[in-house]
Image (cartoon, rainbow, N blue to C red):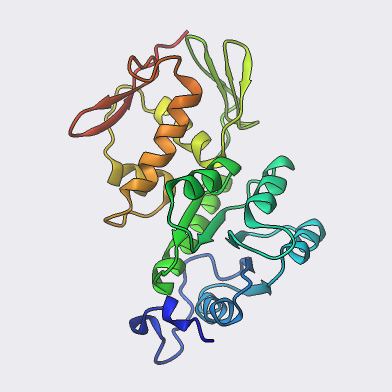
Length: 257
């Protein structure tokens, strides 16, 4: 049975698009998707902007490939045979690999999305999805990773009261205790702490932290913000570090130690 209904007809390329001079065409991407037709359609589109796209249809095979080499991005289906996407994501992050991960899921519950983000996925895309949207997301993740690597990492930690942020080690401590954050949660916290007292709306955060600003995806910011604040705030109703500016967005209110 064909599953191409997951890809909108408008997304089918009428002709090959020339590779963009975006700085991402030499990247290598691993696609872990057990539905063969979807995986091949993803590859066709990504090959227009990336140098190498490797397809894997089994979770156990993906685990082996991840041990053999470094990847520039991973597109990871949630439901996979042998080893599921959540477990693969957990293993990657347990080894301190900060490769961008875009998780695909046919499930639509909030719990599934939260679990993926909690395990360390940078973003998620629910099925059915537009493959053009997927390519845009991947390009944004690659650009963001490229910019982060190009920046000189500051040696100074950011210390605000009981909160300590170590940019070099991508580590956070609260009252001297390690706080486990996902890659994107850390990016959000570091961004806010680097711009204290400045208010950012959801669209601005999508653009600054995720690298894209698509209407309708503010829920991505909401999910990450809720998880982040639950980890660093003793009382989310009386925040000490990140405050909600109602009707506008969020701002960092922590005071330097």
